[in-house]
Amino acid sequence: MAAVSPFSEDTLPYAPDAADRRRDHSPIRFAARVGAGIAILVATVLIVGLGPFLRGLAAISLLSVLAALVLAVIATSAAAWRWRAVATGYGLTLSRRAGFAAYYRSQFLNAVLPAGILGDVHRAWAHGRDQARLGIAARAVAVERILGQIVQIVLTLAILLPLGFGSRLVPLVWGAGAIAAGIVVMAATAVALPRPRRLLRQEYLLLRPVLARPAALLTIITASVVVVASHVALFLVASLAVGLRPDGAIAAVGLVVLAASAIPLNVGGWGPREAVAGAAFALVGLGASAGVSVSAAFGALALIGVLPGAVVLLVEQRRRP
Image (tube, rainbow, N blue to C red; front, top):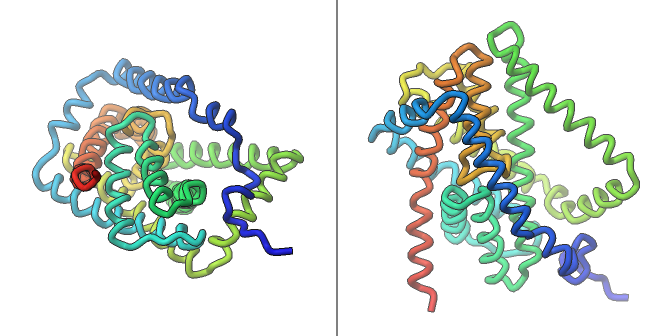
């Protein structure tokens, strides 16, 4: 019997049927996510007021904009490198230039569209259309983002846990530790059940082509660390812009805020990020208003940093017949 390729969309054990796809992409679920992001943002404004947001936006300078553009180039290059490592593991082709441009475009769309993931959806669709393998391209993008977030979470805990004890970061460490413990308990409970265990085995079989290559793993980890470092550096730039002296405590808070930015309940990135920034700054004794101001400056600088993605989008639209 001829061997069946594990990457054929027709043989993917996780491939949903048409009804599942309609449920997964339900406008109601999308609206609920966006609505949750708006609710979190409004609640933050009601607690700290509109002033901290305006102060953060007004603090942006030409120097901070230049820093944002440079750091965005570094982060985008590293993220595109990670995507290429995953995509080639699934047998897809992706040039450095195409990957870099597509990642810039996806970051811009993530920043200006609700939910914060539509740029990744577009990136997967465009790459899958070019490769005539839409299902595998979508999986490659999803795996690339998930592995990046896993590295980010592990790196955040690895830095916070030894740094926090005996310092003003203790409340932050306890909060991060509680969240991590909850995730471990939920994961262990899910693995103990037959159906989740079967799904995890299927996922592992699909991830094996990437995870079984030491060079690809090293690339993914290295690129993810560079991405996180670039974003933390931008957070420090934002804190400097609003008049705070960047130090280890603010960098640690930045790691927590970046983790919150990955929550898909936002409006163009705004929502949980500002709420968590206010709470984290309050926990370390810097004040919730300062945290919201830094987060607002960070959000604006992050948007400015990915504006070249709009140029990529416009050029592609003009070239398209």
